[in-house]
Image (cartoon, rainbow over all chains, first blue to last red; front, side, top):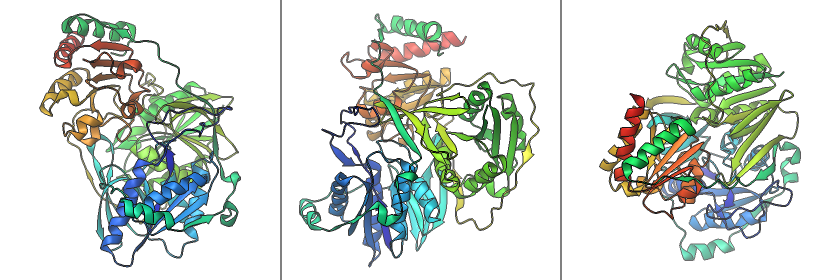
Length: 257
Length: 321
């Protein structure tokens, strides 16, 4: 099978976020970049299919500035065979990124499955998997926490609200966006990290893909750090007194119960 | 005045309150507010849309729309957009809304902003704010071109208007061609919880690893049941096996925005804050006065949750009497 995984490089959760001067984005200085954690489920799932299906290949694709090549190498070190870097400006939105990724995938000879994480933890938009599927004209299943394979047919367990699940059947080619529970992503071993450094990463320019900044649909502006919260009210006393005072405050002051 | 289309979500014939927040907000701004229902035999829900302020209600119904699938529902909503030609399309940021709207945006070359936490209308234009970087940043959304404006909005971000039950709807039917669907919904496996979902509840009470066992979560459940709250959990409590993953609030769990969030024995790691910091009122109960959760809390109780939570349950009961 020809397996593809689209990954995004994002700031590590623990990184302190600083804004750029015109408040249209973040200051990229001093940020520790990682592969978005949900994307690791996609990489792992593709590698597991490959291990069970001789002759399969896993290609990882990432759109973004040059820095994203590091995350592609992380995926190569996990065991991916090929990597494609699609040039994309830092401030691109989901629509622009999806057009670029879909155009890159359309250049490939045959695409059976395209894996994603259910969302990237930077903008948390959760749009790109469905957009890419629509551009490729294939179905998508998101928030997938389990897959049973029978040839090219996939029975996907999709998590919804209230602890319920939808069991969705699709046939490849399809887009699958994975979530926590799908699998347990492997760590790259040191020898594989060394080998991954030598692997070739194919570079694609937007001009080669027929995609441009006019594909951008939304921009972010006036970014604000949340205003520092006023010090909360500390409620003293024994447990009974604390509970009484709290319920009183929630009822008459905050008016939320 | 603009023409706004709100996708009013239903599962099993029950509508989502979060959809009506959007109907209400659009109607309150004086917009021509169209509601569209999608499902099998859902016409009966049209009146409810009118109660919350919909000017006009549309129904797309078909046996193949009984259960949600991205493929069938995107065709249905897409047909509704073609028929109604709205200036903007809104939906709740729920498991259905967040899956569906991107696909529909692609079909209409629309401009979509997801997971917004503030919405207003000025001069017929949609103004939105959304959190980024796990809620560490709030940004204004700017639509760059003239594409159809679309947005999904997080539940409880706006609040529900008072329904006017004297209003009636005269729903119109929209038909859609659903031949050749490639996706099949085999089954919907129901969760066994009678409590509301953490993402939808107006009140969430969460417990951390300090609960020490799955059984001890009973004190959280007892408190929650008195006030109709959902029960949430920190990642540490889920990883320890005290609660299922579906209850997890935070980075790798659910993002919630209730009117009231009560964190019991949760230290407030950045991953947890990412899932609940947009809650309107936050209460922290923790033995450690230095716990980071107190920095985001509106009300803080330094104390033992095993004493405070049962006392709280007793107070909730008094209030309900």
